[in-house]
Length: 267
Image (cartoon, rainbow, N blue to C red; front, side, top):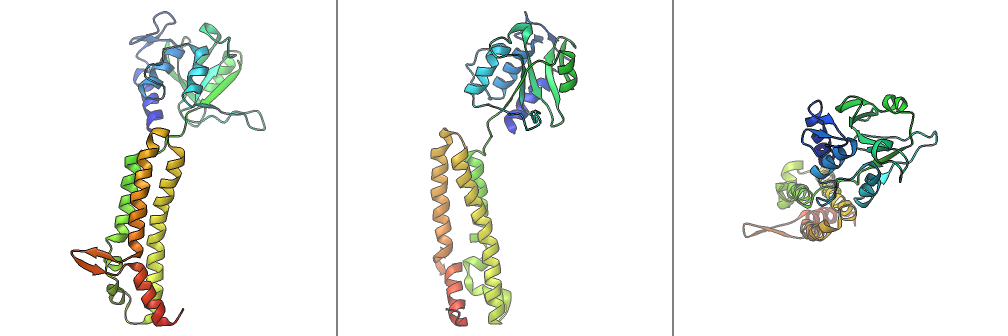
């Protein structure tokens, strides 16, 4: 949500400090509804930097080209808007100038922040109340593309989870299992299973996060994330084979499990 926060902050920083003008709409002291939205989106990196400051009617296409999607009405005809969505009033192709209006939903309670002539500036108002005052024009609501975690965030989180497992003495030095759980073989076996299951689930969760990110982030991140996945897979393999620390070999979790299972005669 970092980009949405930036766009909304741009609007809030100018709330009550600028005036409305369809002629002097380029800032910094005055904007109209669509120029304010364009400037906020470009500032937040949600539209390409070379995007021209258009009008309400051109905003339809600008948002769609940037990956925004229309929010469809539910079975009762209501459009479930949420914080960060952009609304556009008017008919596409005929919503320029005073025939249209636009702004952001600033919370999940249908309040909007918009630059408007009625209050001569940027204000926060209930959407439906303002919409009814303006004659209930056609409404289109756009939702921004999902923001996936960055490659660095995925790498840090995954590495932290893997390190939590690999750096545990119990995993790195399997002979500590008996000290941790006692000499009772059944207790030792149960403890190893519980310990490994808990920690492996944490690692698997991070790996699942990487996999989801690989399929959800933008194309330019894919190459970097694939490298992360390869590194994680290599570390994951290390859990099951003998690991080396300080020149000394210590059994990983799998050799320890095999030893205990063999002693118990389970297999």
